[in-house]
Amino acid sequence: QMELVESGGGLVQAGGSLRLSCIASGRSFGQYAEAWFRQAPGKDREFVAQIAPSRGDRYYADSVKGRFFISNDMLKSTVYLQMSNLKPEDTAVYYCAARSRNIAALVTRPHEYEFWGQGTQVTVSS
Image (cartoon, rainbow, N blue to C red; front, side, top):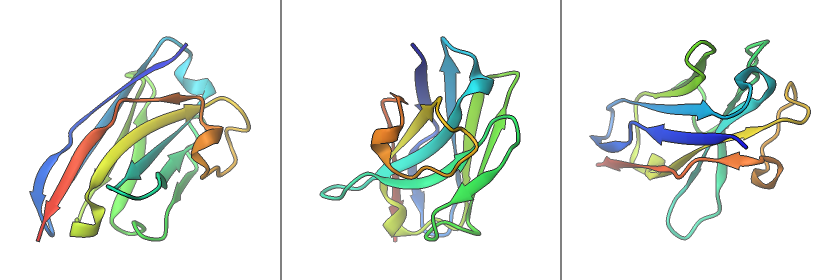
């Protein structure tokens, strides 16, 4: 079993920045692809970004390209999401997720991820 714990959410004004962190424990961090998803009230959970741990390949949703950056620290078993130039439409609960299958491929469907964190709220005021 893998446990994921997010932190770093909060309230920020439009144009501001936040960095989310997700600490993984319980399984070998390098054997999983990690991703960030988000879910706004009344909307489906949507893919934000993904990183393949060993190769470092990164993928982003079009809505966040050029503003968000996903990275990881293998020694700390932590994945980060640096968010810049935040917009009110970025307001959502952000979730960290991990999967063990086909870790080099881009996978945007939530149900293909085996492990999830509890989520952290990000609110962007206009």
